[in-house]
Structure formats: C-alpha cells, structure tokens
Image (cartoon, rainbow, N blue to C red; front, side):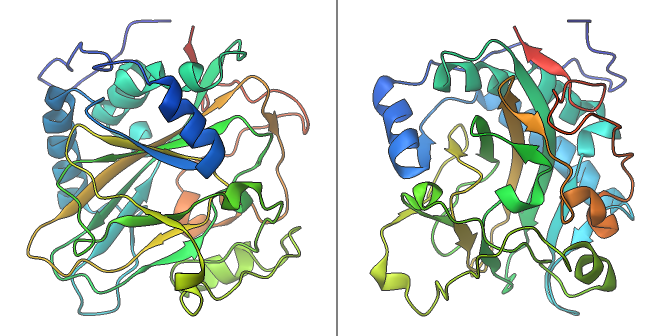
Length: 293
C-alpha cells in the first residue's frame, strides 16, 4: 500500500479502530442485517471528518444532491467525495473502518474500498429517507458487501435515526431502485431494472415488522448489509445529523454492471468515470482500491 498523497494541511489521525468487533456483534450482523458498534471509531477521526464535511457542504459542488423540497433545510448528499478531497480518502482507505470488514468475513482474502458518501440532514429537515435497499443500485454481485454508517453527531429518533428492518436481507427479495428526488436523470437511470420485486408499503405496515433504530453517538458506527431495508424520518431537532458512509467488499464479490446500476444515474455519479471491468470478474482497480491486507 502506497503512502497517502494527502494535500490537506493537517496530518490525518493515525489511530485505527478503538477495538475489534465482538463475536456477538458479528453474529447479530449475520442474523439481523444491521448492528450498532459502540465506541469503535476514534474521536479524533470524528473531529477530522466534521471539518471535511463542513468544507464539502460549503463548496456545495455541482455533483452533490439536495433531496429536500424547495425552500426547506437541506438534505445534503454527495457520492465519491474521496475523489475530490483527500480527507475522505484518508478516512476510507487508511482510516479505522478498514479494520472492520475482515473481522466480519474471516474467510475473505482481500478487502476493497468501493465508495463513500456523505448524508447531512440540516436542523428542521422534514424530508424522509425513503425505505430502500442499497443492493439494487450497486453494480456488484455477491454477499460480502457491507456499508458502514458513521455519525458525526448524536443521532436520535427525532433527529433522523435510520431504521433497519431486521432480517430483511434474508428475504430473497431485491426491490426496484428509484431516485430519492424526482429528476429526469433518476427516471432514466432506473427505468429498466433487472429486479422484478415491488416494495411493500413499509410505512403502512411499520408496526408489523421488527426494526433496529440506529440511535448512536459520535464514536459509534452502524454496519449493515446492502439488502437490508432501511430508511429514516426527518430531522425535527435544532441539531445537525451528519454522517459519512463507506462501502467495502471482499474478493468474493464480482462486477455486475446491470441496467439500473448507480453509474447510470448521472445526477449521482456523473462526475465519476465508470471503470471498464469484465462482468463476472474482480472489481479491483484504481477506483476500487484494495485496503486489506
């Protein structure tokens, strides 16, 4: 692994994960499809990433999204921030999160960083995060995929904690992808998905299911499977709800550029060049670097 080519003034924190995940946490992830890892991210990394997110939001790059309605406080998002800000690269490629996936999958020989994304609900953001799975958006095939959701603020039900439907990653269903905001780019990107399943009305049947509600503190992380159904309500508080998420995959995961994958959505990934990889082959390339070992 080459040394990081950081251009930011302050050196990034050298701290790895505070602790290893426990066997109970690993089994809960396998069973429920989501689990909170308490006190695993060093707080110096949390402070470092707060500054990175602040800079990202101040720039408000054209590649970012605002899923909120006109005139509402922002529901800010941006994919692949690591390509334009080395602080995000430091966090995902050299930081504490890469210690987690190979503990989840002890049989994995290699771990790759797939992509990162920032989600911020400003105080008073009423826009919910709709119920969805991540898997139908990914040009990937395989099971050893994990998303790590790292809060930069205290997150409560009222501030927009993410709700994860326990066990939904084992249902065998992959629901049709859709855009979080109705714009032409998302309509075209997801017009012809290879997934036939229609998503149930989880709002109407919410009480029928068993949910894990991700109320967390800075220093915690949530790991979840890309087939786990999840979503969040608005931020009804006067506090920010800032998070950085990172997806890692193992060498068992293969490239699957299906007809409705995320790179078709130019509103989300128009600033990223989709790599030319062999369908069914490995994903390792400059855009998806190996981070372990």
